[in-house]
Image 1 (cartoon, each protein chain N blue to C red):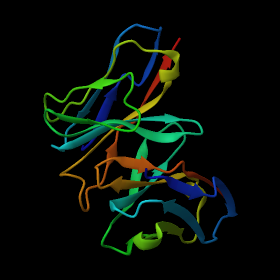
Image 2 (image 1 turned 90 degrees about the vertical axis):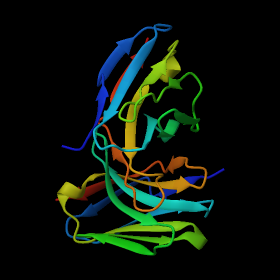
Image 3 (image 1 turned 180 degrees about the vertical axis):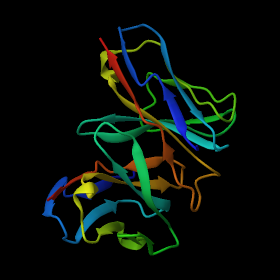
Length: 115
Length: 111
């Protein structure tokens, strides 16, 4: 089944403890991206990647890192999490350069709480 | 800076009615616009994608239109059903490859 898989789905951590949220897709998609969803603010793009070793900042990249060493994986790294990073995170992927009819496929989401 | 607005924020309609959800964007230099559905606590499911060169797309009871020059898109849902209750989001793909989402319209279909 074609899908985007995120792990963990739920995580409670403490301020300053480094964590990684993994994202993997099995559709050979070139484009991958991370979003956070907050009440009243909607979905905001954190980082995106057009292909292996190519990453760019979205609208809210502060406090996050990403890497794209393989096509299928795009982990989100929080080096020193803070409470304002408590949020629902989504990973998504699509084929090609998103030009034209390339639909975004989303993962199920990862709910992160930073105490 | 691109801004995407969805009005209304919430909508309740009786089952069986046709309805229209609205999405507006400030910068018309987009590659495409997508409509998504999100159920509570779940991820997003793509409903329709309209390329910048297209005017509309249809899938079953759904029809999405795009007027790029005026910065507007609508999602038309025919013969609404309780199962259509969800949050509907629109998103535009900018020329800089960033994706900007609206805050969504929360739809409740009354049985």
